[in-house]
Structures are given as structure tokens and as C-alpha cells.
Length: 258
Image (cartoon, rainbow, N blue to C red; front, top):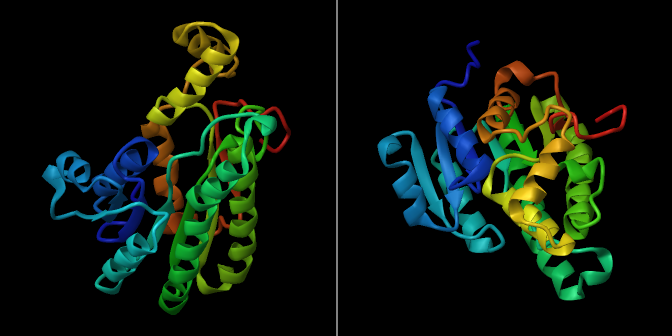
């Protein structure tokens, strides 16, 4: 299928590993250009050394205004078509294990920068009459996980913002969607497995195996599988899909609208 994104330009946040890296590579494979954002510029350059013409690296932490300013400066020089909001998650822990400092830091890490950047980009997309906003969150939006209190709370907040924003931007040809991944073989899942292993006093391998056994398809997903869906949602083919939270979880969500 021709996704129609050849020569399109996208911003991908958290592009140096995991979902961000997989989406970046898939976009480039489809002929798109990427403004790749990550905290480590040297890692970006190493990973994408063979794609210098297609990738523009932006170094910096997304929680800082200076990094968002850098992104917007890059946008001024480009005909931008979409953005992937993606970053690491907060510490694990049950509600009673959290402290207020954890909540303050998680607001910055998970939610605040996404709202800031979305509000900066919305006028750009409105004027263009086209745009794709894609938020990478978690299956915990639909089925909260006991040991992911901070993620449960703030990612649900991001989803509420995204849904409301989608209603305001739909008439301008701008879609806003959320992808809710379950367990995938990415670095982010390791902290979840390690926490489960520690809490239950079992080995890492045993904790991972038990997690996989609970997934209906019997395995974890791959970042490449996830990226293929993300890339479609970033394409013109997805123009009638907006305001949706779409799971990519191997059937793990037990509800009817998983």
C-alpha cells in the first residue's frame, strides 16, 4: 500500500530508541523526512548516520522549553505534516508508594510538554489545512495497572486532552489520535518486568514469561509492528480516523472496547 507520505515531514519525539526509533525508521522507509528529537544527540547521529538527508536531529529533554523552541525553529523551515508525541514513562509504584515530588515530576514528563507543543503546532496545522497528531501512551489508559499509578493518572489526562483537541481541529483536516500499546519488546518494558520481579521475589525471566502467558496472542509485540500502525495513522489514508484511542496489545484489554 502506498501511504502517500513520500516527501512528507514529521516530528518524532523520543526517536533514539523503542517506539520512537521504530516509527522514525518506518517513516524514512516510506520516503518521509523526520525531525528526530531525543536527549542524546550523539546517539541520534550514530543510529541514523546513513540517513543524514532524511533526518534532522534535535537534541534536548522535552520537559525543557528550550527543546520545544528548537523543535518549533525547525518547523519554521519545513512544510510539516505531523508529529508523534512520545517519551519515557514515570517510576513504577502503587498509590501509597508515591510522593508528591513524583507527581510533580510526572506532570512534567508525561503531560505538560505534550500540551505545550500541541498548542504551538495546532495553528501551523490549521493554516496548512492538514496535520496528524499522534500520542503514544499506554494500555493503562483503558485498564489501569496497580503498579503504574503515575502512568495511569497522567496518560489518562493526555487522552482527555487529545480527544477534546480532536473535536476542535477536525474541520481543519487535522486528526488527533492516541495509540495505547501493551507489552512490547522495547527498553521501556524492562522496568515493569524488573519491578514485578522485585515485588514478587521471582527471577526476571520468570516474571517476563508469566507476563507473556497472560497475553492472548502468547507473546509480546514488536516495535516494528507498532510502527506500521503508527505510520498509517500519520498518513493521508487515516483522514476519517480522529479522536480515537487505539490499543496495540495482543488482545490484553479485557473490555469490549479494548
